[in-house]
Image 1 (spheres, rainbow, N blue to C red):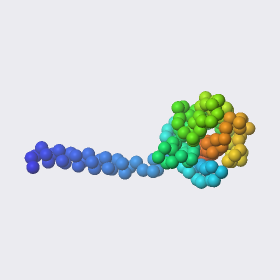
Image 2: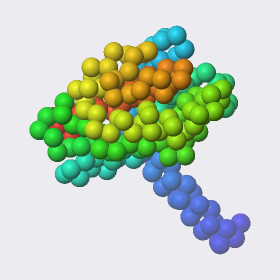
Image 3: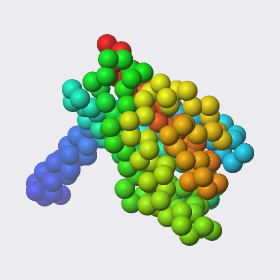
Image 4: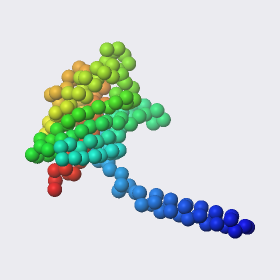
Length: 191
């Protein structure tokens, strides 16, 4: 074996060792998650974890990008995680008064499970769902989300007819927001 080959092997081993060590330093504790109640068809409840993909706070609000499973009605090979982009106010006097500053799902496949948009009612487009379900959540407070009664119910700001039968997806959105508000309160209000 030539001297150059030995040097290359030593360098590769060193790089491999450093990479392995770096991977070991990144662990589950570096991944921010929070629990939420996931509802399956019929209201069956199970605790799932939502994943915070991005979090950046300032003195006024915190921006979150959250991945959560909205619907389990499809085979796991074709199911999607929903990605919610939400900003929550930090500047209210109490955590219960903290509110959603803005919310969007962007171009998000799977938000309504198999109903994205609702395939059997043509007027229920993604834009309609955004206008009637998502955007009314702007200014909703933690106290209002905490008062939500669970699967099959809506908060007063939401037009229930806009859901068009997608109670699992809308219920999981509310449940995820409830979990995110709890996480937000613990990290930005409980000092």
